Image (cartoon, rainbow, N blue to C red; front, side):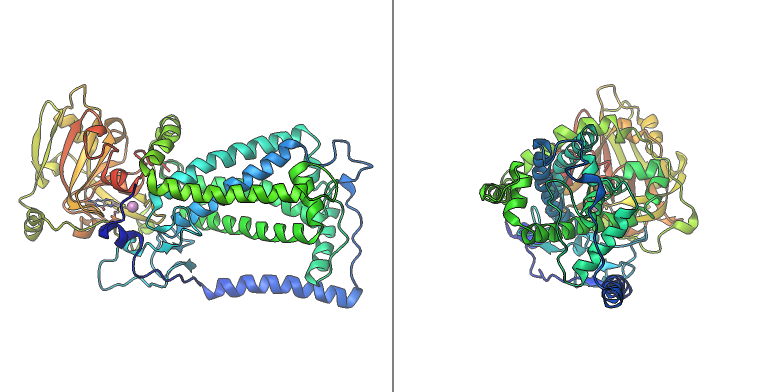
Length: 555
Ligand SMILES: Nc1nc2c(c(=O)[nH]1)N[C@H]1C(S)=C(S)[C@@H](COP(=O)(O)O)O[C@H]1N2
Ligand SMILES: [Mo]
């Protein structure tokens, strides 16, 4: 059970729960104009030439449709479970989104450069404002699990359901082409586009065109809409989701560029969600308006009659979907640890085999460095850290010990002598923002060669001077194997200067194939251990323990 004590309430259920959406006026006006133009064109066409004729869609009528008519069981099954998964993806996605309630088309995420924000707040520039401060509340009626800063559990739902979504999608597409059903969805002649326009002209001028019986075929607009949902929105959602993975983007920076960059991919991911949602609204409206009982029999029972059974069962199906949200809510707050472990069971082995193998190797140029870099985490308040900070960390020593042959205590000057390197990389926070910076420091590999871990040491733990969100010292762990990969640094420099206090002075970790919370700031000491299970709650880090984040966040 997640406690709702004062500290947790302050985070999950803050006083400021206002919901505001701001959209960049040019985007609002631009998209408004496109819609208005399309509607105006329809009215003008009707005024000039009358309502256009909509001929029969050629490809799918009883006379020339070779395969079985109607909706086989697998179509009806996919339709239902896909609805279940998509709704869960939307709800958990909204919880993830409001953890950084701003969307950009640039990878710097400079406040003010967003095209949409779901917060009434502008980022204050006169004090430190962390990305966690910026997270917003969302009602559990809309989001799973909802409230504020529940991104750990929201990700569990998102990633569990995305497996169902992808498996259903792949199965559906294979079956489409294995049967004649693909002919319903895939436009096979250019005439379809003309017919689609004519159908639009009918709708836009408030006429209901004569409907083909969907049991045999769709009108052209419908066909294009269904085609787009299956063959464009679905794949686009998956591909832009992958473009947010630090392991992928840091190995193959060009992959994110296909979508205009990492943040543009996140924006497209969001727009795809909106398109799915808009589709569902229009789809359901038209289903109701064009013979609800018959349509429901088609898709629920696979029959083509006017009885009520499909409708009734359909409502039961909708009730099941809504119950799944209630159940997810209940499980989220009562069994968060089990949920975290359930996801780990699926994704941990799979990530070890796939994303985790991608070695970080990105190199941006000086011009790419972000003018603004969101800070995160609580500045240390411990007196030993503040004293060290007062004289520029000259007296700081880093203790590296645990299961090693040669425990050491190193000053910043000693560390520097191990050989410093620099890289310009993109940082990915779990909350969704990114930023590019130049980091300088000593590769963890050099530290490992110096201390020489014993064979039983498998994990390296980084302990911070700073506290975590709900109190207690911040720490995180890495497998030794991962810190031996390129671009894993104990960084003491940022953008050519000594690491600023806010960004983790005197030392912070950089692990470019994982999310930001793995990169402990204000490092106090390093310890080699057998397993992460020995520390804290045993989940591998303070955020993993307290906020149910993943042990291995390659995505
Ligand atoms: N000690 C400590 N380190 C921390 C955190 C924290 O809260 N405490 N937050 C992490 C998170 S969530 C991120 S995204 C990065 C942020 O690094 P930045 O402040 O340089 O952007 O630091 C990570 N390291
Ligand atoms: Mo983060």
